[in-house]
Each structure stands twice: as C-alpha cells, then as structure tokens.
Image 1: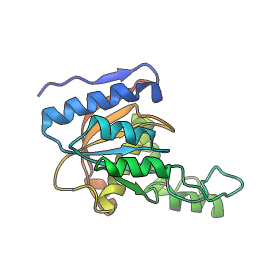
Image 2: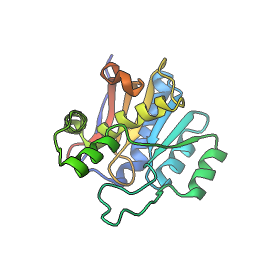
Image 3: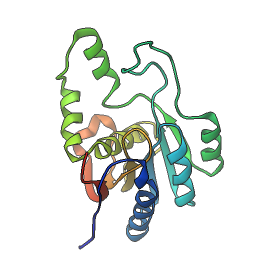
Image 4: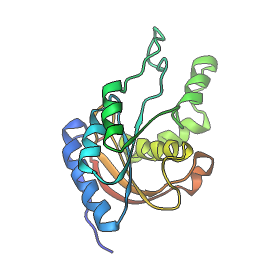
Length: 194
C-alpha cells in the first residue's frame, strides 16, 4: 500500500480545516466509519460533525475540575453547553472524562513531587511524534473506556494542542488497560514542528 502523509509547517488551529478534510478523505478510502476528535471548547467538534456527517463522531473534551496549571483551583468545564447540544443534535457524542495520561500523574506530581511516573514517561514518549499524536491515542482510549468507540474496528483520531486540530491518525483503538495493544496504523497528517 502506498499513501501520502501531509506535514504542516507549524502546529496549531490554522490547520484544522485541512486536517479534517484529509482525515475524511482517508476514512472514506479505508471505509472507516468512527471518528474521535479532541475538542477543548467545542469548536473543533462542531467542525468535525459537519465534515463527518453520517459518521459516528465522538468529541472528547477536557475533564471538568481544576486543571493542573490553575493555581486558583477553579472548577471549570471548557466545552460549552451550546456546542455540546449542537454536536449531539448532529448525531455526535460528547465525552467529558478524566484524561488517561493526566489525572493520576498530576496528583503524584502535585502531592509527592514525582515528575517521572511511568504514565508521564509513556505520555512523553508519545509526544516524540507530536503533541497531537499523544492526544489522539489518549482520547481514543477514553472513548473506548466510555463504550463510545468500538475496539473491534479501526478509527480515525484527530487532535492538536490547545485549540484546533493539526494531527490525524488511523489506529486500532483499545481500552486503557490494554494500552500496549494500541496500534497506530497510519499517520494522515501532523505538524513537522511540535
């Protein structure tokens, strides 16, 4: 098999439209019907349900609560209620859940000062391929753990860093306890810089 990979000059939300288009083209070519997309506030999720109309689209948002970088420890939910309602009205699903690589690692760091937990090392190793690649693997496990993403068929996972999307991969999803069985089958697009 021969395919092409698109590399963006820089990471960021400016690549969202192209990332979604490329992901849709590859999903169509492979007959993949399930898509998982990272979305902080809901904007990327809204674009994804439009591009992937007729597909099973799962948007994964940031967990509710104080975030590890928030010194005030405010309990917040970044995914807007309006975006959630619109995504669900289009047939998509929204998952707000604890991050597979995040919650316990942050607790260990905050409480005990541990910076090199095994989970942190795994997340850091995945970031070698780019932040979006790490997030794409993470959200696919979160969606599988929630019963929203089938582990018996391939999926397209779309992510980025912060806002927007700049990375899309084809993977064989797994539940988080089976992390080492997760397989990234193809890279559709990613930034050259991380």
